[in-house]
Length: 160
Image (cartoon, rainbow, N blue to C red):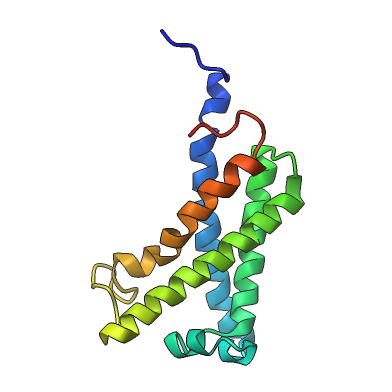
């Protein structure tokens, strides 16, 4: 039988990192929604992101910032739990970056829906749109996470 270079307890950390990344995307989405509802005053168009404002006119700068903060906080907790060498700052930076990429995925999906003159990508989740409406951020996040995670987590913690 082939021997692994890492202890079995460490070899499963890749799945844990993916799970925390998924939680980060969800936290960013939830944080952006509630942050935008509570504090939202300025459209994304105010930042010179006219295409983003046109694709999703209800998204606000304050909501995006709240999403970045929620994603950063979630990922910082994950980094602490997983023992990242960079600790909380690396986790927060990773989470905020993942939140930004997820926002780009969400806006891209919104642009596709607007161009196709459809409200939702399906009706599997009433009131939430289709499956792609729930997963649009993950589509863009996956390659970024796969690039960043092996560099951020401890030696031997990522088994691809």
